[in-house]
Length: 87
Image 1 (cartoon, rainbow, N blue to C red):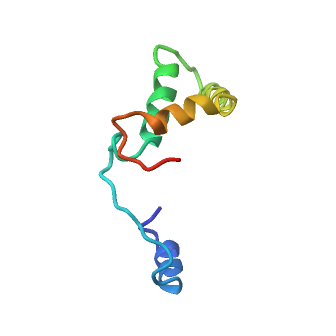
Image 2 (image 1 turned 120 degrees about the vertical axis):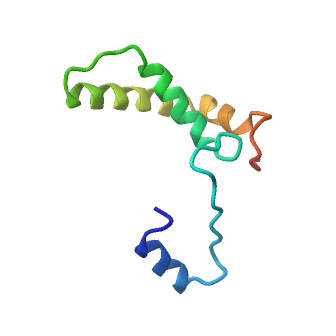
């Protein structure tokens, strides 16, 4: 997303106001959202889906469960291994 022409154009119109930080493709110690996706994938492992609708339903169900657990999301950002500034 950050490499798209739309983002590049936006950044050209906002010089100095937005700073992009380029991260490796998978960097859980730099990007806490990787821990969220890992949690989501673990919750779906060993499940069998016969069609895309079943998979979509299962993923949305897990995302909704995460939505109801802000404490868990905060935990991902506050892990000592995470090099992320939080308040």
